[in-house]
Image 1 (cartoon, rainbow, N blue to C red):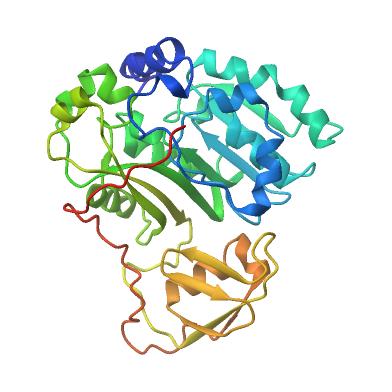
Image 2: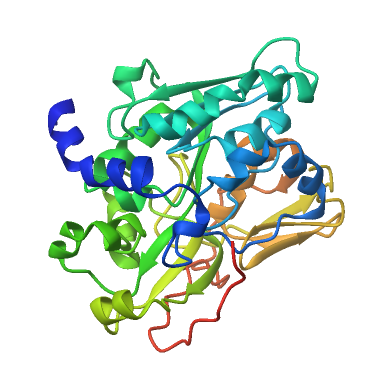
Length: 355
């Protein structure tokens, strides 16, 4: 796939986000408009981000990873840089954050305020950089194999017609034990390809929404047999014209994490392992949620499946957990509900707050 082909495929998106939208108030749906509130330990960091960046932020959640001090984070589709500047504070002066976006107008805002943020954060040198480019071709931007600890993205991957290439590139640049931690729009069915020709459906993050089962199969094809849903919410489509176009299709904002760990299996297997969380991740003194069905209470031993044990011991989370036992014995399937809960087609969306 060459750069010219990618550029043509993204022309409508660049037009919508570069020239049609001037702020979150111009969005017609809440799909690309986060209604999530930040946890208390992140609230001061949010307040440090420049007002103009907040005003031109488009995202469906807050995929800000934990335990990233001193790490390298890559934001795919960083826009005006809100999540880059949040992560900049969390990785600290010794860490590094890379933002990639294909829309020059968005990046111009991000770059304009770089010095302002570095001064506000008290950093002696910038720990962020921004690149104009495509998520499908990180190699051309000089992002080499296994150089990134965490890849994040906020309601952007749905805009790409080449999702297989986006995820392939993300896992290429991740170190072993790294993870992709992202929020995006998913659908309860496969959507017609013709919807991508509608600039509003595409720009509002609906036309490119992934069918959750196809997403699972995509990851499996890349050698990633297990992923975890952190949280999800229904998206209300209240614009009459858009509602008429999408019909019975239902949409959901989901935050997902998937680790680059070669030992993961496609089912949760029981090896008799136990995990203990030390309560040492900033902002999570009393418990830590790995996903929507694994809450680790501080200092309380918890039986875990082999995949969960590997996720918390072979990633950056390993500094905060103790896993007792190995995989030398096997006791069959582990009933931990590790298969992500399916989207329920008949679930009524709840209206979110305004952006």
